[in-house]
Amino acid sequence: MRTALDSNVLSALWSGEATARSIEAALFEARAEGGLVVCAPVYCELLAHPSATARFVQEFLDETGSRVDFLIEEKVWQRAGSAFAAYAIRRRKSGGDIPKRLLADFIIGAHSLLAADCLMTLEARRYRQDFPSLRIVTA
Image 1 (cartoon, rainbow, N blue to C red):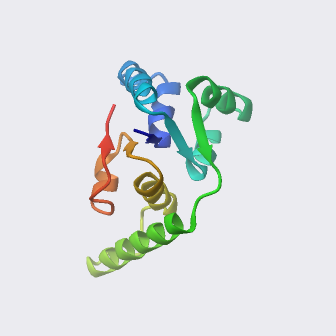
Image 2: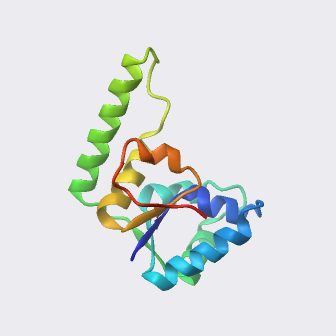
């Protein structure tokens, strides 16, 4: 079973947050169960972490056996676009202004749904409405 990683999981680990130990255990378990994958937008978000450099990120990914999926298939982009459009319509109908969520969240969700078996995230609620069939793993 291949687990896609959301950037918030690794950010919390690297920042030494209270959940870091449980995240580390969950990463080891997911790696043993079939491997870890990071989509290109997550990779870019990881580079923005305050203590990260490109070298640090790459070394971490190599050490954990995490594969970066830089070439995202067309079906992922289509699913992300459909989910983002549906979200924008719901937001406007509810009286909200422009969408508050970032497109990257929808790419991460669609990639996890179509190119992995589950998504490890600290923000499960963010993905459940737009990707109801996506299996979510929390650390």
